Each structure stands twice: as C-alpha cells, then as structure tokens.
Image (tube, rainbow, N blue to C red; front, side, top):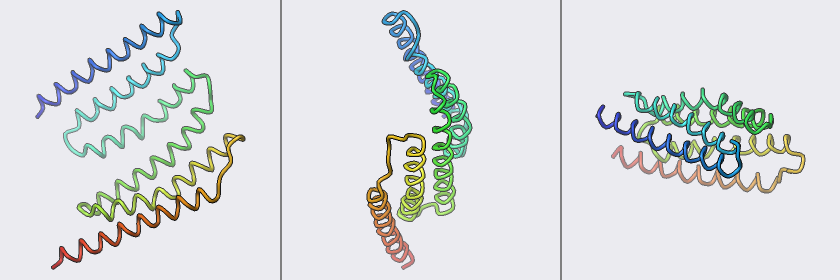
Length: 181
C-alpha cells in the first residue's frame, strides 16, 4: 500500500509540476511577463500540499483532508487576492469559506456519528445547505451592489431542500425499520 502511495505522490508531483511549467512558459511567451500563470502556480502549489498530506495520512483521510483545506484556504485566498490585486477576493472569500467550512465540518461530524445511514446523512446535508446557501447569497449581495437577493428563489431553494431532506428521512426510516426485522 505504501508503495502505491509513493507512486501516486510522484505521479501527481510530476503532473502538477508539468502543468505549472507549461502555464508559466505559455504565459511568458504570449505576454512577455507572468500574469495568469501565477494563479495556476499558486493553485498547483496548494493542491500539491493537500495531496502530500493525504498520501502521508495513514488513517482518517477525510478528517485530514478537511483539516488541511480548512487551514490552507485562508492563506490561499490571501495570496490570490495579492496576485489579483483585489482585496475583495480575500474578504468575501474568507467569509464564504468560514460558512462553507463550518457546514462541511457539521456534515462530516454528523455523518461520522451516524455511519452507515446514507439517506439520513444526505438529508442532514440538504438541511444544512439551506442556511449555507442563504448566507452566501446574502453576503455576496452585501459585497456587490449590482446583485440583489431574490426572495422567491431563496424560498424555492429552501422548500426544495426541505422536500428532498424529508424524502431522505422517510427512506432512512423505512430502511432502518426493515433492518430491525
């Protein structure tokens, strides 16, 4: 197993290095300077770190992935905002990241506690998606004056998510009831 992980790490490293190198060369040859390829280089670098952490993790791979992404998203957004020379990337991205990371951790912890109950976990994820999507929509609207929030779109999403969650809970109940017999 360890040999497979090492091969994967080497293969991913070579592929990411080549992608970054090709981007840097193309960007420099086309424009005479480095511009968009810096975004590629930043993304590839952070992706490599995440892959490295996952390959080195012997257990709790999902936990390690969530932990790595949770810790690395803010430096990534900060560097991206510096490359793009746009502070809104960091400020808006950080707020959305906090909401999203909180939702993902909640889903992970609930799924870990209710292991084996697929429909229950999917239903909970849909319920968590309601305040997440509403929060993201309204925060983006605060940052962007040209955007407005649509009450009926929000209501439609909430009702649809509630319906899907309810169906999932019903299926979970039926599956658990039949498993008890």
